[in-house]
Image (cartoon, rainbow, N blue to C red; front, side, top):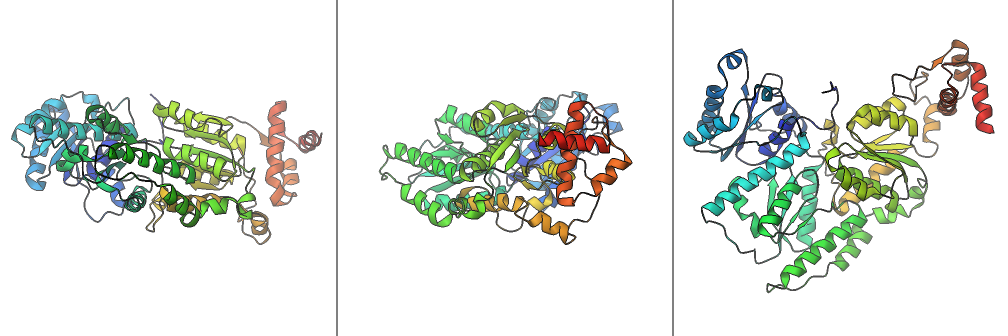
Length: 513
């Protein structure tokens, strides 16, 4: 076990609460001590919700530790059943309360006998999985619970919808631009004359989950949440699914072609006509998405050869890496993800698109990699943005975890053809362009003369003596950073701990030879 003050993915119970609070009329109860119940505040703030989050904490205190939790947990479930009348109550422990090793399954079984609501226990190993994995598992568990019950009660309607239809699985609260992506997917499917059967969990009803198999196929826009549900539906009901993220012009076209393939395959057994979406792809790429035109413009060509670093969840990091390289001609020195459980898929997707691949959930390792590579721009999470500020490297945020500023009020999807425009803008505006940095320096745009160290490691041990610092301060600001970086590199290579004026000139000589 390691003490961490920053985590890319939160604890498991946060994932369960995100899924539960995304459904309509579902209530979540945390079996947790005070301090673990911050989810309500976080969701209300980031999503700017006007209603109270349907999540309650069943507090573990000294009385519970003395007598056990059964009475309190069952009472809280029954109280919420009477007050809120939810369709479903989900009980989840936290990492802290899991230490007690209480039989929460038994508590749920006892409460479900009396409760008018359905009650289930979130079957997640809180020590082995993180927020993302728990969310994926919880969604699959809820879907399985209701479809299995439908089978037992013989209420299942085996017929598909008359017109082509899909389920969109994985849109949920606190997702990175999820609400905007959902609007864009709705527009795209409407253009393709495809009906939306259900969107889960966001805004979905658990009572309607029995109708999921009526859709012709499933769309999984993000691998992180929804893939387990799609695999389950494919195995049990033979439902095809598309797990390509429609991000960027190339993958967008492939996504639509996969939809066309599935529609035409199922059309053979129905009275519907075969479809051809190629004219739609051509029109959208040429006239709606400006990214294809922009990638050939002189503005974008100025970025050719610039080096970048990409880091985030698997879906966004892989997609942004491919967009940078094959659509905009920008070099990716390193691409990485913190989703260690999906590392193999990530490596397969970006093989050949970047120089190095980094799989880690240690932000310090990511910071040292960025400091070592010195890219022109970073595309990452909130943490990479902080790292970029320390190293004076611009950063575009492309993945969760994020800050409140990455929950914009305006329409900013990452998926679909409008998403290609948003991503192109983000990439272009993330670079320090042309003479911008030099002009800012001349006109006082930079508010400090402090020399910024280009390393985040705490064990470097390099010391600049007063004479060398004075010499460094005489160098124009726009060139000072490069001199500092090259000098420190030279010192490390030579095993020098104190940088003097002589070392600076020796580094200059080494660079010129």
